[in-house]
Image 1 (cartoon, helix red, strand yellow):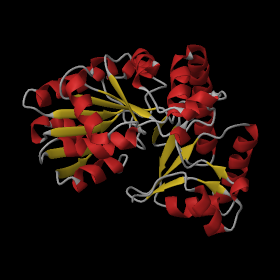
Image 2 (image 1 turned 90 degrees about the horizontal axis):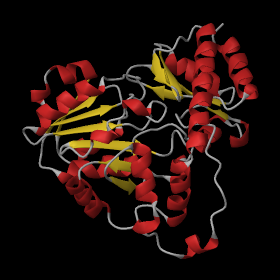
Image 3 (image 1 turned 180 degrees about the vertical axis):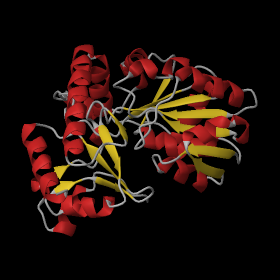
Image 4 (image 1 turned 60 degrees about the vertical axis):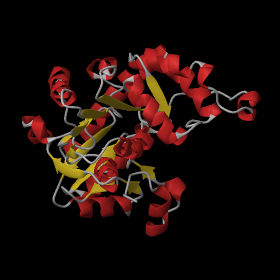
Length: 327
């Protein structure tokens, strides 16, 4: 399997620092999670039911005509490549590596390139996979330009797959509202913005036909009953969502300031992380890890991703560590 952020237990063993003593900045998961309520006992005792209201709540939140709840957008990433014959697939790079991994495993012809090259000649692809905003590169796209690319692909039976795992801070840029169009597939994650990564929950917005095929591939009960209960309430909590967007924007600006003061000007990012391209990224990663601060290291290109510290103490700890590491 591919490497991902959040492997805190392994880092604790490797560096001999107890997991409770780490500052984990290795993921793009919000440290300000939605306050999860107690789950009523009957929900633990019954099988999940599709008619519980979750789909309606998700359609309202994502402004989508149809959605399919899945066990994290990762479940859809792994299943979608098996739903069509061998194809020429263009995938944004650098980006979330599981996309290319999944399409290759299913036997497709995969090419990974920067987004501007992929979009320059859409006729080269049967399937185009973009991440908006990109992780870790932070690229953003004009929704109308994406819809034009989709129209070119769909006219010959192609797909445009948009991974919007980090879109919640800027929902006006989402393509979910257009996902009724055949050949447009939008993936959303409930783990990042809501801070509910442990729930392993996400949604796919697409045409009813595509969602039906995906549902058949994934099988019944993709999400547990307690997860569905929590998600339905989180998606409907508009007051918390507005407050979270403001809080995350402030924390993201503060993180950019801390990094810049120490010569780590962010190359890109979004409201949930900042990405720094550095030839010495591996050395910085190790030096911070020796001080109990975990970042996400990328080899190609050499770079570090910093998630958001949760509070003043965490910001102070990162600032102090960078003062030592970057001097």
